[in-house]
Image 1: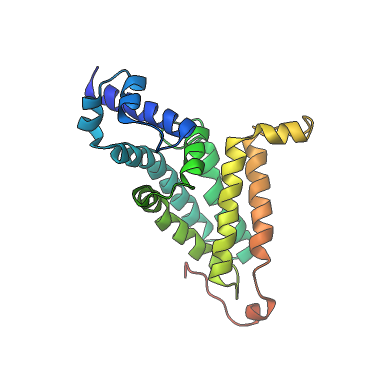
Image 2: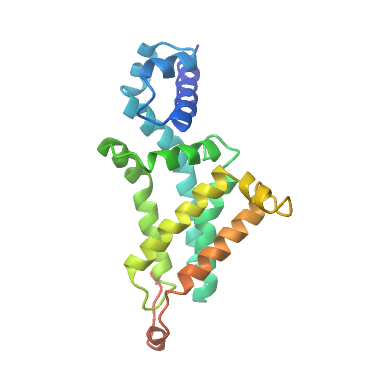
Length: 223
């Protein structure tokens, strides 16, 4: 097995096991066995189990975050603050869905892994997660703030947390929408899911704008 093939097989195996059982419950030897490799190959390519996890995050989040930044740059050129807010939210949400069939960009399995690791208290794991997402998250919070005159940053942070939770749940258990709507809605319909998540998030963020603040000149963070 070539080095590149072995490396890819290890990442696929580790992501599958981590998403099913959690990071702490999986040993390197289990990853090696699932990948059809040996433990020495795992340590050769990644060093440690944390190295494997960091590589999984890197291969998913780099293309996802790159696309988010591209879409956000387009959104920030919109003059109307409400239209700009809607476009910014779409810039955040769309890549999470459009990459779901692309192993290099995201997907339900990686989303499930992210959801599981969000409850992991290990400092090293939290550092990997923060390194993958904090910069892009702060950029979106800043961009959203530029659309909401007078809104407090801490309130925007709270509601961005709710948006992330909506993304997790919608991607990981889409069948719940189909089941509870008795088939009237298809939880696997990504276009509908994007529209619903964006619209619901727009309403919650838009409610933070203070009317009195809009009476004074406001400037977008893109200015």
